[in-house]
Image (cartoon, rainbow, N blue to C red; front, side, top):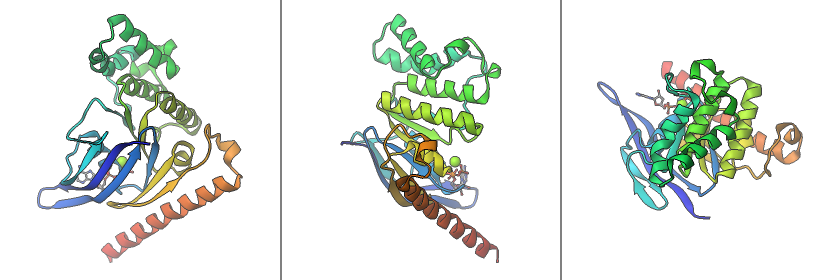
Length: 268
Ligand SMILES: Nc1ncnc2c1ncn2[C@@H]1O[C@H](COP(=O)(O)OP(=O)(O)OP(=O)(O)O)[C@@H](O)[C@H]1O
Ligand SMILES: [Mg+2]
């Protein structure tokens, strides 16, 4: 399988008034084409920072990002992002929001206007929102708004999907539905996905591989070799699932315990 994303020796500092804060140190990671990885780690360890560098919003202090073997600088049509807070335009309807995202990318692909409308409608249908196509964001629930954000990201027709805790504000039942939706759609549309979460169950349900982060660093990569579709109720209790779950819990919490310990030491 070919490498879609290569993250090489990335270091990143946030520059404050008087001093710099090192948020990432020597991050190295490769993601295969079509692979779904989850980045799991406690609050403040640098997950969003890493995603913002992948997205081109932040420029690393050193190191480089390669996509399809070529160095990239800044954002690009090859990457689409979904954030936690939906980030929809409040003055545009569902259809217009999705169209806004899609206009440039679909035009670039030389689709006619009719084809573009058909594709946009197809993405809205894929996330189950055809009935709400002319509604405004304020008329939609949080879960529906996040579906629009997913449709908009898909409509960009980018090979790579970057998602930053997209479901953390969604209630648990709806969250399961959206997890299933993203899992299915990423496979149907053959996306390479980097999905940030601090939820171990979510990571096991979605990922081919989980990258556990500790502050500033990647701590461990754990393969999730469970067949798809993954139904949580069916998985719970299975020996292999429980083994992976245990592995992730110990990696994740060992990390948190160490952070808390270090913070306490700082205050001593
Ligand atoms: N704009 C900023 N200026 C200075 N420091 C920042 C800034 N944004 C983030 N940081 C710091 O960088 C570190 C990494 O932040 P980041 O947002 O990447 O964490 P995270 O893993 O995404 O956390 P969370 O799970 O809470 O979203 C944190 O210590 C944070 O305080
Ligand atoms: Mg974050």
